[in-house]
Length: 459
Image 1 (cartoon, one colour):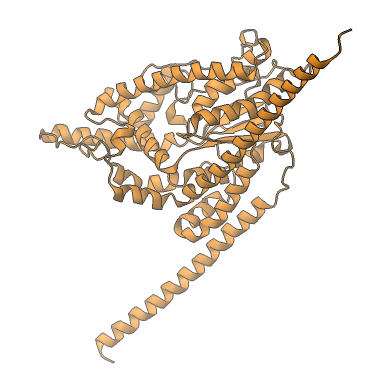
Image 2 (cartoon, rainbow, N blue to C red):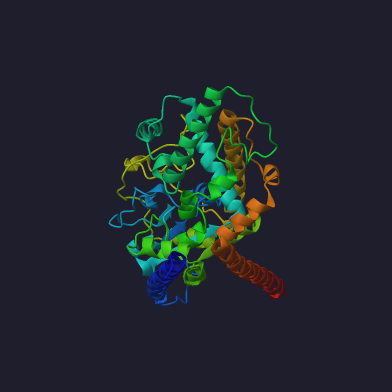
């Protein structure tokens, strides 16, 4: 047998071994994902899923506007004494704390394994996946750019220490997923600035703020990096399914990576994620801002107001683990400050819903004022931060400069999120119809009562 023939036979044997190994690996992955999915779906469906339970868990998918809901809705409804010690990655929720009624975190759905399932309602907001990827990239760059004012801070440990000392609470570097994305982006910004300074060359002009490699990691590089693959892409689906790298369940790492390796297995994760959305009290959409807020106020807000007005509702006496105030000092911001109850019970603020007999209309009015202030503050922070890497400017208009090739790649990498988002749109449409129907029925009953009263015979 000549050497060429031997080489060909060897290649065939290697190919057969590889095929056998791949088949075995796929089978192992399929069993792992399928077993997890079936065990996750083997739960009793609630018939009263539209009724608010004792504990409200707001599953905050990053970059969907969840902070707005927390500050402008939930903090106006719940007093601080009823807010659970919040779980942002390393600050895990302590289920032993008594009497808390509100939990707002970036934790994925797996945290419900630590909660009293029969007494917990879950709500969330989803966003168009393409926009969410853009926003995640923009925010990671924006926050990382704030560190450039400290040229000697190259150690992540030293930076984290500075953050905590200035904010007196939880910094962005403590919070999932920013504890991974921001340090990665921070190092990249420092490296690129150092390269610009060492070369002393003129800056290449570009109209695309998402592809200015002298200043920041280009978007196309960001989306194709393993860090983004593990944390950003299909992030909403993995978060709703309970499979992020911040999960409470042991098998999450294996299941997530099997799905990332074999895309066909994503159908099992989608099935679970859709079931989870089905069972939620409320699912909002970032793009449908006004309608989402109206539905939230009528579906969630109205029930919270009703619950907290009940005579047996306690709004004090919860032991908690600390307090931090809004702070905008230093390179960090209050985007993710941990607003928990001050241990000094005498200073615990009461909520507007219980003190002023707030109505849904009052809640919506207060929400609109609050949103306006938050948007203004957010715009100012972004402008201030991006000055460090001028001429980079992120905006909806600037996104139009991104190539179709990059957009197609984002769609390919977020196929599960795209399908889940479409499913959420259907749920949202049904929620909208139900709220309108309820409003119409209540208005008709009110008009009928008025007519009947006018028709009563005089005495």
